[in-house]
Image 1: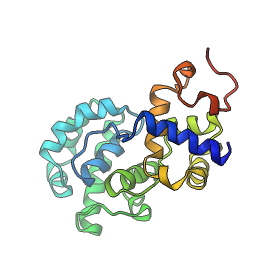
Image 2: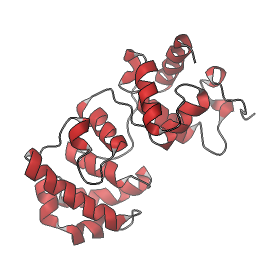
Image 3: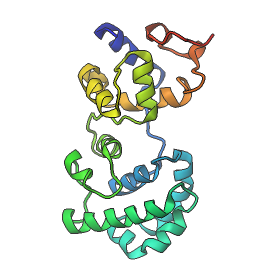
Length: 210
């Protein structure tokens, strides 16, 4: 996709949704970090159903550690992989206290050291909590980037690297949100909604739906 097409691509997504928001509920960098970690292999809706009770009891690392693994697990048992996630939430809370003074770090290098926090989770936190123009590549971003020809790559890391190079600065802050929402609601995995797509004519996908 040419630079001109890429600019037009994001201009149209921006026109359709000027201020895109993530769909997870959170109140501070810590609750965002926990919510994103819990959303791995789970839907945002399922996480949002479980976290109000959890965050009412523990919205800081100190409160989460005091809550303990059993109670964390009870709060999130409706989410997939809740046993492992409860262990990770407790462990990352302890590490935040021990190594970062209870404060969520604002660098990728530090965030990915936390239990249960991968590159995608770290990039979401950096973007949403700290306003950094990161490219968090989930399954939706990966699919849209490859299918449209925007930023093709064989791995999420390759797509992230390509997006960082090709996305114009004026769109960088919200780019991954536009791509996530486009993939979640329009450019669906099994049957993309090409007739309703605002970037249909810019997309290089050959098997467009009628």
